[in-house]
Image (cartoon, rainbow, N blue to C red; front, top):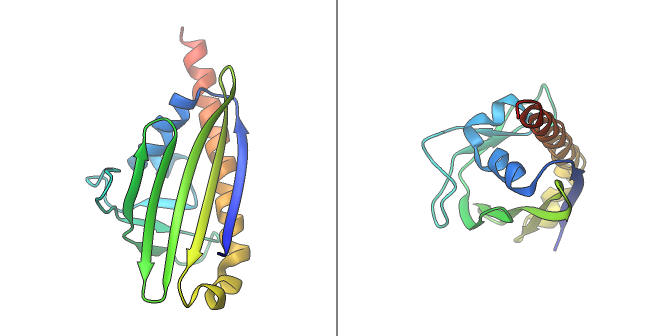
Length: 152
């Protein structure tokens, strides 16, 4: 099954990173890859959400309505988007790797009859997008973590 993957280590507690990930209405402050198109739709297993993505800055956003397939608080969020001939499963996972140290991983698994034909066209730009998102999440979470420590 074709897939894309990235991971990054973040100097912040897993629970804090989770709160940033699920607050999709606030993605606009840090995330230049994924966008929330309807803040009234929360990540609830079995429900859909309205999102868009921007593979490369300056290009047009691609809107989609995935179904949330798993919400495991502080650990994992999955959704599945489908168009005829192509399914794209997104998995966002958090893992403790030390005190206030979290590994964030983002995987996309592609399946369906069109997967092997479409993936070469989107692979490079999509990979850059998910790497950009991971870096932006790291920067935002670490900045938030420092702000919380300073305010104590």
